[in-house]
Amino acid sequence: MRILKKRWPITSILYVMFFFVIVMPIVLVAFLSLRAYTDILLSNITSRTMQTLEQVSYSIDQEKSRYIRTVAAIASDNNLISLATSYHRSTQSKDLFNSSIQLENQLKNYLHDMPDVVSAMFVYRDGGAYYFEGTHFHNINTRINENLLKSTDLYQKTLQNQGRVLLFGTEENVLIESNDKYILSAAIAPQYERSFSDVEMIYFVIQAKTFENLAESTSNQDGSFIILDGSGNIMLDTSKDKSKNIEKQTIEQARNKKSGNFETMVYDEKMFVTFLTMERTEWKIIYITPYEQMTAQVREIYKLVMNVSAAGLIIFLIVSFFLVRSIVGPIKSLIFQMNKMKSGSFHVDLELAGPLEIYSLGKTFQNMTVRIQELIIERQEQEKLKTRAEIDALQSQINPHFLVNTLNAIKIMAMLSKATNLVEMTDSLIKLLSATFHRGGSYIQVFDEMQSLEKYIHIMKVRYGDRFKVEYDIDDGVTNTYVLKLLLQPILENAIIHGFYGKEAMGIVKITSRKKNDQLIITITDNGKGMEQRTMEALLHEKKVESLCGIGIANVNDRIRLNYGEPYGLKINSELGVGTEVIVILPLLLSDPDHSQAS
Image 1 (cartoon, rainbow, N blue to C red):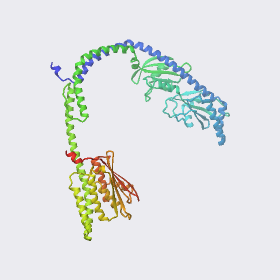
Image 2: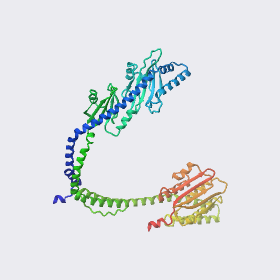
Image 3: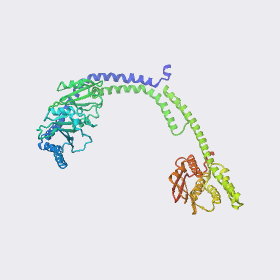
Image 4: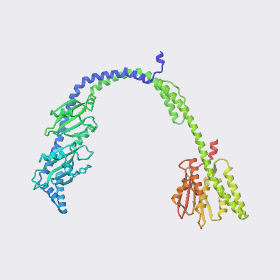
């Protein structure tokens, strides 16, 4: 009883159940089935493979005969060889061109129905060559230097077999640089007197579609074809791993007989080899199949295994019923709590039960949720403190600049004379500072912001006279919405001080506000002197520029982004000699956020 009450690891329970109920019967049945049907499998596979090889052999023989007949016809055409010689001996460009055109037309007549032929090259005894590109497009570069071609064994072998068409595979086509695996070459040394012909050899490059189709038929299989010419050179190899060569003993075993099959080891894997020699040529086709793949195809074995497996599964389901119930229940409860956590609820009510691993998982999950809640609260507090510190720091950068400028103006005017406008300017300053520093919170209604802006405009008119005027176009639907304090004053200051500097005509500033979806759009437009793109970027991004107003606008942009996020902020459009437009994009706030957070 103590053993049953102990929390066993789930892996131990499943290992024991699977081994005694499923694994042992399946292994026993599979072993007996494989021994019983191996002979039948080999006989059936060999018969089907030999039939396939005979069909492939016939197709390749037909294609090979077609290539040989065409190449031999070209090499024995006296008129064509004469044209090739005339082309080589021509010294005048006109004669050279005419010979080239005639030679090209003759070759097209021979090769118009042979799209496999990529190119033809006439190599001359005393140097030089004529190159013909095939009648169909091929993405293969076959232009070969004739001197390099003459240095190959392929060239010497062709000269030694004069008048005979020779075919060469990828092993001997060392000069052709192509990713295409199905490239053949045909070569012939024409038998003509030297006085009649300068052509020493004709070299053809062929993209063998028969080989390509054969390779595609095995692309989704583990088996592979190898085609050898009469000398044992590999003409085609469809094996997937080209970095290794087929072991020589495999080819040697197939070379000694005309047809048959045998077992061998290739890449440390047992393979079944079937081979056949073509009737019309000495070429040999070898088909290599993994031994394990053949044995896996026996349907009778699968049926027997499935019957035994079904009986084992029935017993396993009965025995494992109680096991599943002890596992699935706690897992479902854990998943339910995880989904609650995913939706944002961190109040976990999990009953710990089940095997050791599930029990430990539930306990860890509980501890994790508690820790996440602690981290979230800690993070929120840190972000709140950080944001408040950044906003306070930015506001402290904005307010002193305006205060110093205004007090300097009052000082200068007081020194000059006792004027009424000094009293008005001082009164406006006091009201403006009172609205800025003594009102609680960071937000203000648009109406109050415009009132503060009027005080600032009055001060600036006292300083600069009637050199400018401000026009308003405020939508009644936005006057009671809330914005950050001192949001528009730095922008207006930039328009008056920088935009109208040195301008003789009356400066006009127009302030408009509109509601657009869930956004408040405030636009400040002036007819000042405008600015360059570089200056606009400095106003928005550079904090340490010499321009006093530049500091103000950059910090206004930062305040907006810190409070509302990246989609909001300032946009500046300006044109030299025309004016500047500053667009303030804010969220539409119908209530004071400071009061909302406090409640």
